[in-house]
Image 1: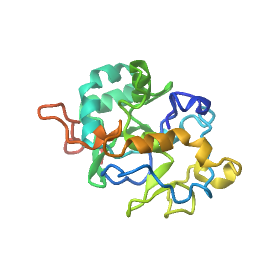
Image 2: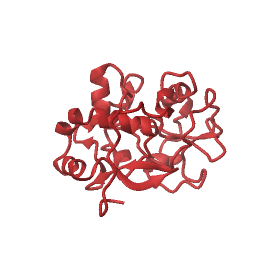
Image 3: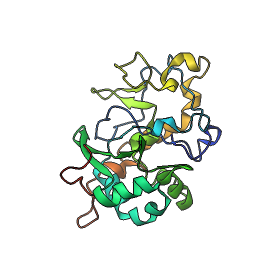
Length: 223
């Protein structure tokens, strides 16, 4: 999900969820079977929450995703907060900290570098292109879905799979009537497209030779 569009219109464009433990870097082999889909409870309340899922999220980014962001970075920079733009121009948009062997998006002033007062800059650019998720890391789009180490999909909830993030929306008591089969239908559809041959499977392919790569954080940069 992603803070750019209210949750009521998620099927077309939805809020930025850029969070959580890193997911496996291998595309799912089939449409996801979510282990706790019937028992979990979740409802996105953006913009009421202010896009809190973009705060200190640091999602891991696949190589092909990072290459696409880097290729279009000049388009994104004018949209960003001054501190975020300065950080990217100085050190790049990823850090040396890694999840599942992948670099993570950087944070400035407690927020993802691509978070703006209007929402996610990557999300907004995708909407303009008619392809909402074109630039956003898949971990942002799929939230609150996650994958366990053995590949099982599940809905992130407090008390499930050692969930450590204290987001209020991951507390099932916050939305006792919100069944994810309905409230995260867009995320479930997106996860299906991550499968080999799916529309979003490009994310797991190695970047084309000579294509721009995400800048690495130099020595002394954020870790």
